[in-house]
Image (cartoon, rainbow, N blue to C red; front, side, top):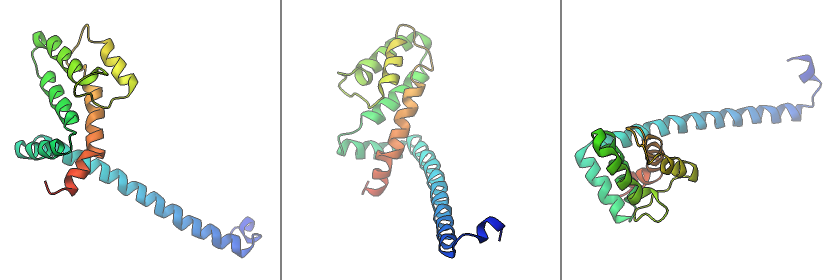
Length: 153
């Protein structure tokens, strides 16, 4: 034992040992959650790239009246692969359907992302919606996808 620790009362040493075990457990739990989150993102990605999985997930979201995130994600996928001459029209449609604060299927984006998107609508490019799409994907992975997995769907 090092000299500094030998002068401490044994009760302090016992407490320190207990804390070390607890912190070790917390670090291990945190690591497991990070791995689990990464797996959830991969699983959701696989689901969205499967026609039958996508239909089941859409049906589940529809039953919860919360399909706007999926519809936005799909619209962004369509936009991303659209020819340049259609991008301005599709970008405008996505904004009016999902981004504007009075949009019929408004998605839950932070104000900074929403304002940034609205600010570039005059000259949209292939990556215009990438950040917002990723935020919505993460939101689905952490919220609706786990509920879907626990559901009868």
